[in-house]
Image 1 (cartoon, rainbow, N blue to C red):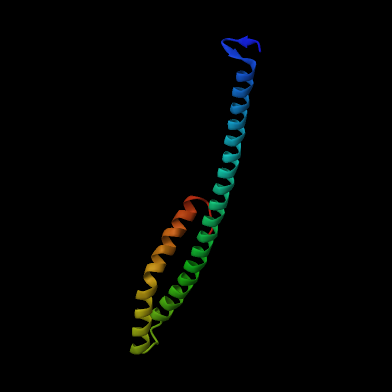
Image 2 (cartoon, rainbow, N blue to C red):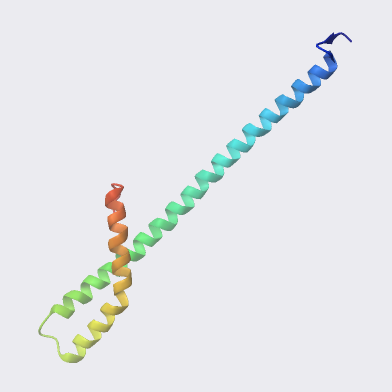
Length: 110
């Protein structure tokens, strides 16, 4: 076989074939990586939506208990019960507010 720059045509073709195979493998890996990234983003979005829903429900309960607590016509037992419920719901209320602030910063609705 003829030689070009110290390599036979067979060696050049073999090297070109190897480079071509590597470029195809890299392309396939990149596509797989992108698909994985898209799937990860989708899963994270689903988790975020679930968290938003749970926090929204907790926030509604918090607001309802707060309204009841502020009602001056309740007896002491009812006020005490509402106060204990508010203490339980307060962490979710704070998380809801934080999530709402993030959403407003990204122009997302909660």
